Length: 131
Image 1 (cartoon, rainbow, N blue to C red):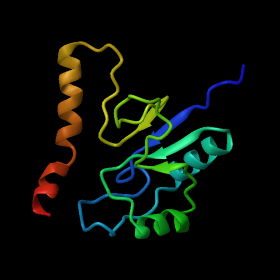
Image 2: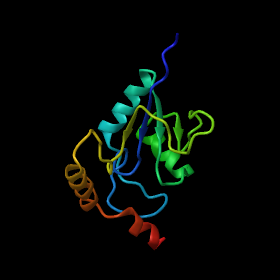
Image 3: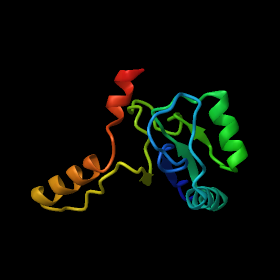
Image 4: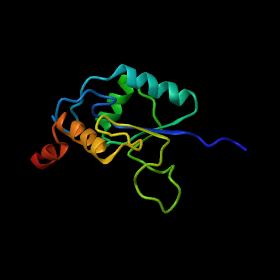
């Protein structure tokens, strides 16, 4: 039996590219070398790499990824998902700067972690209303 290919999903802003607030559809931060190295290493080890972001995948973003040396299999695509599943990519791991990892913590601990992440960054919803 062939082992199933592992899937890693990476957010773009704040994970692959630095992010200091929304500046436009085709305005990106600087590449984050440590993330890019891990993505490339995982892909060379046989992992499927999916970039899943709220950004549209534009030609400028594709060029930014090429210049930054990012290897990936898909952007905003869930074609690896089984039929009749949602558009959330099925993955073995998600890498996102706004995530809270649930590992069985109590309700108060979970609430503290959620509020800590939410309060440490500006809301992306505020930016979306401006555009």
